[in-house]
Length: 306
Image (cartoon, rainbow, N blue to C red; front, side):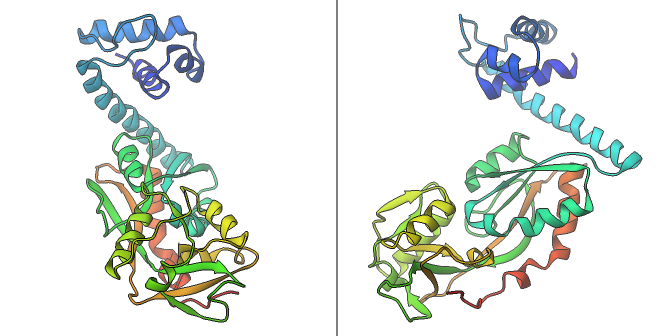
């Protein structure tokens, strides 16, 4: 067995198409197919369901995939570890971030880039469930997500700050001239909210429910930017994390009001696999984050910007 056979197998699992998997792996399709057949011969089990095109993996193949993800991830971590000994950290760090934390993620990745200039970083906006799944499958290295609402499992966690809530609303709307609004009042204006697959939305729905309200949003999306643009257009309001105020200025034509009665918050932080040895790039970010004092940087109550 060679590592490349496992890498090709993982490419097929991602693409679910022999031709695309070969293209992503920079090899020919016959080469990829031969490598997987060699792996089947060595392990003496069928891995791929045979057909004119990719159908899926056999039960044995699914088990092989679990080990392949772990083995390839460990090989990548070994290369990073040895590189760190010779020349400092190099490699590619993959971060998953829930949409409500996107406004502040640069406060983490900026200092990380300065400390480790030879490391490239990619950031994906994902649901908390997707972050858990992709870290489990070794396709993400680290996540920035909720810690105490729907707790993550099999992870090391590092609390960073508490997420509070504001109402982003048109400056000439019914709440003009105010600094705060109750959750009950907010439920009665036309809303746009994150989609129900987002943990932030489930939190917001639960808080509205606690005051006897069940809002019916006019628009749902998985994008904080899309929410901001629709509020800026002047017809809708949105419940937002207070970290939106960390962005350079509110969207034009909007104001941000503190949401009260009740005032609630949820813990946000970094998660990484609870495995030893830890992946070097994730370990480095995990070590840097506590020095950044994000709780102070995104303090509550904020100075609301109009």
